[in-house]
Amino acid sequence: MKIDVTGRQMDVTPALRQFAEEKLGKLDKVLDGPVEAHLVLAINKHRHSAEVKLVSRNVVLSCAAETGDLYASIGEAVDKLERQALKHKERIHDHKQRRAAREAGAGSASPAAASDAAEPASATARPRIVRSQRYRIKPMSAEDAVLELEATAEDLIVFREAETSRLNVVYRLDDGSFALIDPEF
Image (cartoon, rainbow, N blue to C red; front, side, top):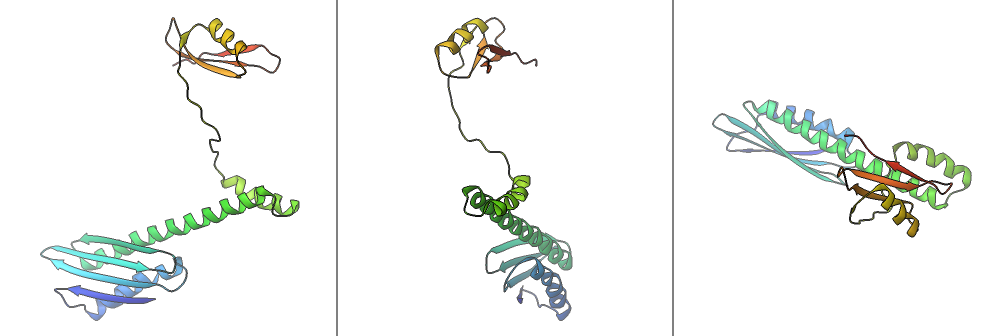
């Protein structure tokens, strides 16, 4: 890791430089590939600030921290960078898992390999909305909703009960009869 330490209107002591290098060295384990870090330190009255810009092969991270102590500012800035780096690494990992699950679902792999790849992905896969539909909710009785369902090919209807103004759902069962959902609030 290449580390540049710059001081604004101050001299950077060897102890301060060594502390910054030790702290930033921990980030080398989290990020892949060569990493360059540029640390800018400044003291303005009682405010000690540290700004860090980290350039990796895959990502550019930056943050700033300001406290009453320069060492604490460096530590806080490095902690922020570590959280950012871990979040970035998790995003990449999730993206690769979703891609592998998509490829396994498409049938590009053998059936045995597809079932092995699908198991871990299904544990982390989130449900998604496949279809969305909007329509007006009309005030009507449950009997009117059943009549409207019989006239259409739909399997359910959401309506507002005319007497109570509550939302209800009527849906078609497999045997052709209808069921009513009347939620309690």
